[in-house]
Length: 256
Ligand code: ADP
Ligand code: MG
Image (cartoon, rainbow, N blue to C red; front, top):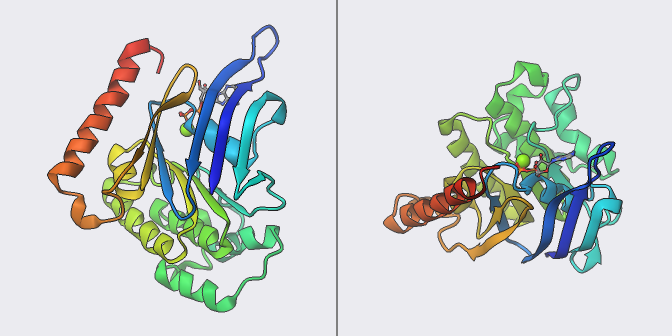
């Protein structure tokens, strides 16, 4: 379970500039075994919120509390899988080395059977000796997912994991992700700028608004995880409604 209470964060100002309030009074609970999708206009603090939970922000700008399973966030105690927007692969390491890297850094033993099963499921067995530069975007994404799921983190945080992919590959990867996720049900927070992706993947949907970044709505989404619900009127209606809200935020303040 991820609990965020009255979280505010300001990036330090440079020189004369005042600190920049980026998150204001954010409180939410993501129950264990849930995927929470975060959406909102560009610049509303989605990435900043994710980094805060990952323990990647300077503490002097932070106010409020962040806990995972009841304990203050400490990357040394809890294994946090953080997947940055750019996949976080090292270009000078092969796909296989990149997949193993997450466990290696945290001194976690790798079960070779899991490694093999995961690579097989992700269609990576023939690509293991290649370098990231020799892989397509979708393949790099698979390598990054393999790394995350091999690590078996306590929580998984993903920043726009599928944004760089074309529409068809993106839908494929959403399904691959769901399939893997359903086996571990790791508590996940996932940033996306596709409303449709949020509805398909997120059992909870966090809608954020900008200037400063705060919660607009935190919704339960009964339509998540079911491919058959993707083309239903209920899905389309909710998609339209959320998109309308995001557009209204952009128009409302002229900043985002
Ligand atoms: P989102 O992911 O929703 O697009 P971000 O969390 O990246 O938004 O950014 C939120 C706000 O914080 C933006 O206005 C952005 O310009 C600002 N910001 C992001 N990173 C930094 C930084 N390192 N220093 C100062 N301001 C930043
Ligand atoms: Mg972002």
